[in-house]
Image (cartoon, rainbow, N blue to C red):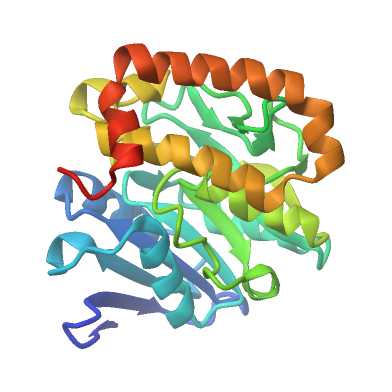
Length: 299
């Protein structure tokens, strides 16, 4: 069944609830309107073996005033009826058993609020993510990123968080960690929003879990990079000045929100090394990003 909400919201909700499973899963897809990515994504949702689901598509290409990524997700979560929320980039497609397998992770404990599957590149050979972790530099680290999949991540287990490309979340956790800026912090817009959510969740006692049998495929960078940078490592060099400035800002916003003083002092030497390299790169290669950070309203 397809139901179109008033044009001011421009949400397309597709419901498929034939009673195959008792767990309703709400899937939120934020799209820029590219049919090259959105159609395969929606086709993979239609083919899911788990039938009790609703799909909420927020198409920014149809909005007079496009929503930021976090704002779009928050709107979708607010509309969602399911106890489990799958947030997807439109450049992600799922194996037909992804939802069914990933749901098993939530059943292990009521404190598991985040589940990651094995996210591969479209060639099904290169790993995109097998879980999000907090690096010693206090940055997001996708486990297995850009490695050849040799079966080295076939064990289930606890993780710090989940990649924003395919974030499977318990609604109860989202409600528990929501703050004045929403489920996903509206100030982030894009980048680091998944680390912030995971870090907040961990501070509130929630856990993440990895299910390797839940397979997804991600065209890395399709929603944010230049075409030449799709599926390439070192994403920073393929981003425009606004995106680069967002990376710089959100790096510190994440730390200010979530880091404890003892851990900050413990990791300070590595933070300094990382940030010196980060600012040196910005100064020499993308000075426009620094200008955009200081003067965000200028074009």
